[in-house]
Image (cartoon, rainbow, N blue to C red):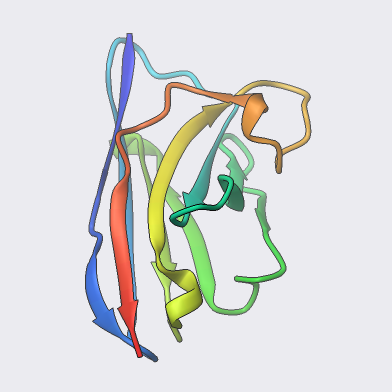
Length: 124
């Protein structure tokens, strides 16, 4: 069983940057893709960014495009989300998960092996 562990969340101010990590551990990791989602209080979980593991092709939600950068370290089975120009609207619990082959990258039901989440809070 592969486990996804997020880290790097915290409390920052508007305009600050933060880097999240998502490490896959456990049995042999062989993912088609991975993704980041976030969920703010009272809101549905929303897509943030996704990557196809082998090719490194990345997709972003419009709300984070130009501010967030997703990358991966294949040797470490780790994915990173570099977040900059943060605003209070980015406040949420951020989750990473593995993506199933073939489905839309922006739908949460195409993902499995969700991590426990890491809280990001941006103060104004």
